[in-house]
Image (cartoon, rainbow, N blue to C red; front, side, top):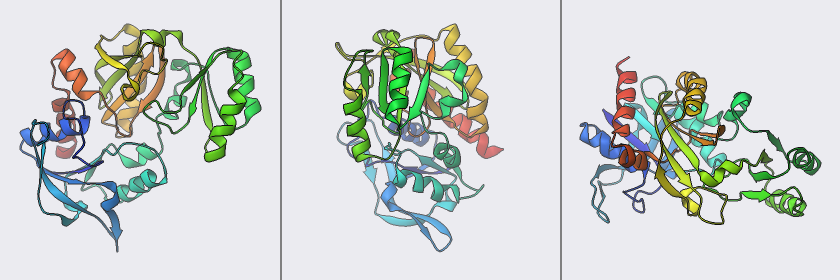
Length: 312
């Protein structure tokens, strides 16, 4: 197949951690042709969805991992698969790319389905499953946020469309910084905030479970650094091997059909203790860590799912 990757610049990626690199590596091993472009080079041109990018070959050699062809202009409808793999922020630039890719039509499979990526942001899709999630409020109004904390005590406050652990604060029941944080966030953004009941189990780790076409493939545990409540690897969290519990399987069974129905082939969910906190569909990570810990080829499973969809 002809595969196009819409992603952030490939030069700086960590070949031992980057999930997009691993997907490209597996696609190449399966005989598929690779093309690479950044979101800035995606365009709508008089009815066609086009991109300016380069043919790509990858190899697992640090500092020499990507061989790129000459820059060329392509019609993305000529590709079998387009991967939507740039990292958040989930802003209007990101949202616009989903609108454009959605116009490619049935001849090209976009992974994950851009319509549902746009309508299922990480911290909003979980609202469909209240029985699986901790108490949660989304609001911009300060009094509403204060009332939530009064009901639940220790809370986590974070920007609704944040990523990578940025802007996450734990506020104790008597913490006096809520008003100041609200003032700071609303001073530079019109977006609401999300506040959740603090889950003490986070000190034992924040589990990232990877689902392939709605089925659990495995998990890694992201353990916060000492003195931290954030477990994201961007801010010092460490990945550790972990298995799936009965509750994990229950969560995956509950959300799997929705993910499959909405064309979300590669998804990473976050589970703290017994509770689902996020469903990551934009650019999930953790693929390489899971493969190393469990000795399995999850990238191969993802491509098998894609190839099956192309055949059907």
